[in-house]
Length: 323
Image 1 (cartoon, helix red, strand yellow):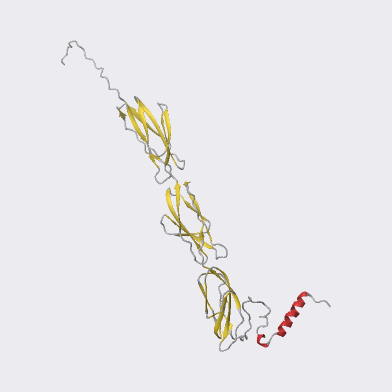
Image 2 (cartoon, helix red, strand yellow):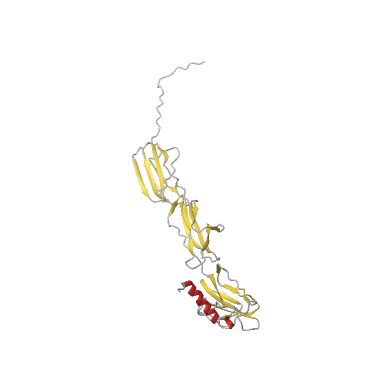
């Protein structure tokens, strides 16, 4: 008669159980289901009134972390962290470092050299700060800078919980992982960011500069009001780009004179206007973000010719009639 594989296994387990010594009968499966090789239930086993009630968190905890061993009808505990370290005695086990640790423990019955079976729990400790991966391009951003707040907590750790950011010294604010932060205010901004993991470890603050150009340059060129009597006038073509990327180019045109120029740089640029009459001066500025001020049109009026008095008087005697 053939025997199925599952039946063979059951018969083997039954045979092993019957062959166990009496001292092991309270836990017949202890020798069948393997514990780590560094521990074994070779001591007399305590009865059911003696229990190891130690509770270990199923999630990640921040290190260093203490586990308090508890039990009923016990006078002490033995425990070890993995198989590399030796067996410790006491009701408190301290965990340091980062990782998932095998925690082996058992309780001794009060007044007897009898023990509960070894138990194995997994204690997950995270003592390592996460890493802030937020980056800001070293450029001027047109209208809005969109910064992705991001970080990581490495492999075998609790994972990122959230980000924290601080803009220009304002109150720090939480943000989600990979959340975009939009900055629209014109000017240069100081952004500080950090990462918080699931157990409360924090990265150090990372400080970066964000430059936003959301306003064009302002043309401040001015010409004399009214007519001038000098043969020529020097006009300073200039402007500002407060808080922005700065003036990078100046253009000017004298329409009636058919003269013009495009000059790189922040200026000012001196334009000499000469000749009798009205001269139309057009000016425009461009900033580093290629924004322009728009053309500004002004009139320069030059008159160097003195007026002529053409009044005439008769040289003859004139009769005057009295009224």
